[in-house]
Image 1 (cartoon, rainbow over the protein chains, first blue to last red):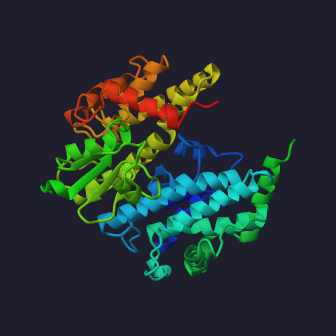
Image 2 (tube, each protein chain N blue to C red):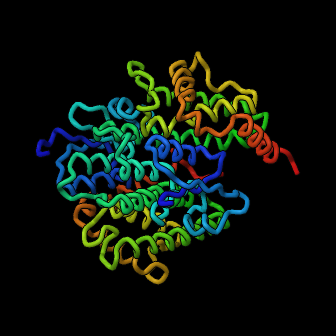
Length: 220
Length: 230
């Protein structure tokens, strides 16, 4: 097929690309990569990072989820993801980058957090989420399937994976007192059809990362 | 785009990220008003304009809200003025390639220099230098592919990656000198070494490259605010 996506089921970055392709109705072949035995295909297509997602279009590979999203938006013109206005584009890119720069390192930390560090890390995460809430315009209606944008796709996974962390570590991260608008936004958007269809199963994700956490916090 | 007061840039002379934006503004002949920020005493305007990161560069365009993050600013400039000196290439695949390497440069390559600046133990320093050697190998390959035998990543003309990486050349040279290293070594990375000389001497970048005193002074500040690791 002209479009191939190399991914792993648990990756939120792969999820972003799946959402973009799904919204634009692009047919693609999904190839699940084995994270412990990285395929030669992955090493060939992404020699720099050796990571998924990798999108291959007409034989040409590309990596980095946000870079892939921009490419997809340029090639398939239906259901535009980025706004037309250059300033609004800049704003979308800013918040997508914020999630990658601030939230991703936090979640990586949380997945290895020891019980004595947990509360501090949870507090920092709540602060990051509070800042992220600032990206939302309270006067704008919540997105629907047909209006999901670049920024929505870049951000929505944060809600799902945060809920998973809350269960896994027994901490409060998404707080109706701290981030009421963000909480509502996540609740609404995670319930949209096209999003639900692409999300990895919650229990499977929880089990997977609970095991991960155990492996990384138990002395061998 | 002739009205000088339309575009305002908040920056600090020593910051390569600020130089990056200035390089782009100069290439596109966009007139702008520049305000020097003193990072030890951030202005009200800066704190209000970039409440999320409290960092420079910040671009203010007419009465629009501020735009932050240097690469995002440059894409914005390319979009509001596409006809004069386009920085990103037209073909989507080439754009994806530019964005990929731009992300690599900011997320993987340049942080090594901050790491080196803050690492005092010899073993740690050697490990970082090894990573720098690997990284420049990759960048050399990327340059050869992208330049197609010409002087710049962008070909005959300076392009997006020349701006994204070019702004770091002077800073890197300074860190190199402090650490007995040569990033753009002519034997190890011959094409990149040639490129580094070319881009540094480009008027649009040379005119905003900080002098040694500015750099030394700024490194002094960094030593206080982001001190060496214990």
